[in-house]
Image (cartoon, rainbow, N blue to C red; front, top):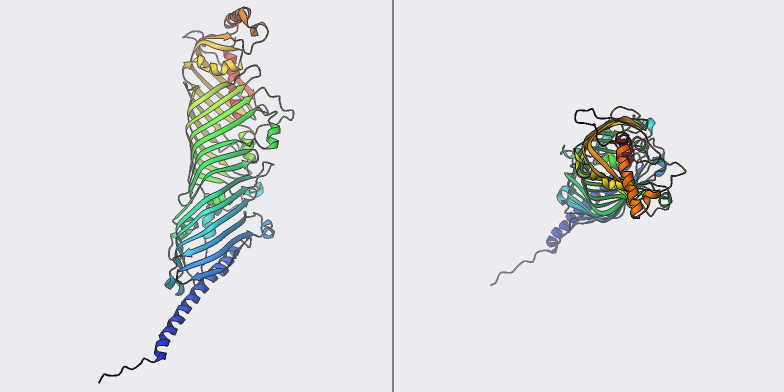
Length: 570
């Protein structure tokens, strides 16, 4: 007989299934509870506590997918309580942050449900928008009372951060925010207008984020991460209401405290109506291009919180500075003044502290336009290398000490080597500085691209042996000496720029200019300095006061020019 098979009782089958469902349900509930309370209770409370109730965090619907080990968050928003912020002696930057369709992927379930913390592979959002408005700088009365700890802004925020017992640590393998729209504004006083940076496609990447009491090194990292990197390209920033900065690429690392910017162009905002009206009288115009800017040791946190620029070193490669002085324009009846370096610094309500600034392979081109000349006279300083040390400005400080030192080497008209040094106290109460320099040998005719377009003459012969100069600027007046050494200098009167018979064409005009050249060289021009090889060279006196519409380069040139002409002319 075949033995009979006993049927397994139904309760024996159902019980394990029910138990498994209960276990899974408990795990899912526990995981959902921890994540929801971490994001919607602890995070909200911590943001309010750390900001003194200035910032408010709102987290929308949170969902936990047990199968995919994924947390989905519809939106995360940070807003600013303006009423609380305005009552602070030092208001925090106003912020409005919006994170849309975010997810935490690769959650370690066992670690999470056993209260070991939130450990996951990645965090990301479909879109992020960030609006930051940094208030005006520290008033002079408060400038000296700010704690030095603010210099490491991100680390100060991280200090004393306490996680809840149900999630004692948070770890993310990576954070990828590839579609960030940033609107960053810095408010200024004195009617300069706000500085503004808008980025439509900023990329923000972080790796190995760890908020973990067991990891003592993590708390010392910016934003608790091993690497924090930002990248953007092809955008325009507005440092003030009348200028624009176009940037090709930007890359920054908060961890390494570095910033690199390439293909930078600085130019006036020509579309601004107020700017267009001012061009009727504006004689000076500057345009700047920089191939590369690299900043080392930058305190990104202090910069982001509106506390100024602090860095160990700034490197500029391939600077191209074009300065135009248009003397054809009428003088401004309002007598508007260009700001001196000290005046510009005094109006800047942020700290600047840079140990060294290095410039390589630069070029400065100065153009001067006259009403009686069709072309601009051009002076070029090519192959420019410079080093500035101790570049410091502190809000509210007024001192003639703690000066910046700038040493530079260039080639005048790309021929004669020029070595100069400037010593300038940036926080002095008035326009003070000293400058000195030397110029090496070069043909005098190399200066004709400037001379023949600004004077009714050209240099027909001569050799510059060398030149030295030094001056002290006190309250905008340069006083000093210049000693040019040259041989066999001759000039010729030109029709362009001349008046009367000297400006006529034909044989008569040409003969008149020839006679004038001969007489001028004989009676008005000193052809040698010194007069002979054994003689003592004549010394010219530098004495020039800053004019209301002079830029700093134009002021320096006018000071040297006046002293030089005092020697060349008899």
